[in-house]
Length: 289
Image (cartoon, rainbow, N blue to C red):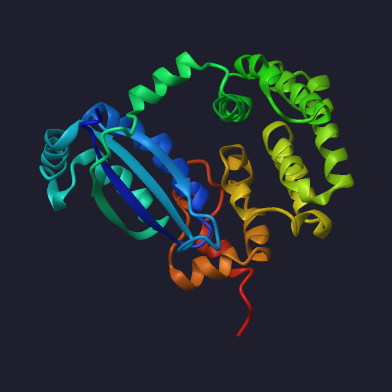
């Protein structure tokens, strides 16, 4: 019987910040929530266009019943402005990515599984295809490449895609010149044959190449029109965003106009290592009046 309680949050996202907010939530708040509030993240996902309000994300938290919820509020409301110090620090960045949200307290059906029960189910049915595919994606790009290699045998992807992924994992595990050249060449060949795969090509360059390589591809209209702007805010693009040439690309995607008109500038503009002032650099790409 599930005696937990859940917080269901609908988050209204500013502009092109959906992927960035989801990363900020999972990477920078979930560990704090577990440690300080005994809250577990049940899931974070994005609303798909045409199925609901957008741009929007959803967060779901699991707490230890009503007492756990009360303890959560008690912890939060002790700080200035009804925010504890950890929340205030995290919120200062999140406020640049979202405009607000709507929360609901949800009581589960008795038969609804808890996080612990789902984790146990994974141990009982370790060969679940959907679970393994998700784990493969996480480990392949941001986790343990050796673990990703172990999961390849359970993937439902075609052999050609798996072969490219093996090359990519070798480069992650052993970033030699030869391994890096092989994975970049492979992703380039795929993008040349099918420009829709431009995200993968530019992502490989961001991870293993130089900012010059990335800007060269982004300047090519054959590729740029197929690139999702959220790709540019993934962790591997940190060096690209730190380069003042990034503002020219952001202007091409319409981001500079949005940032300037709304006054909502992305958090990378205040991050260490940025070699320029976003506002000043952005003015170079605004229409002259």
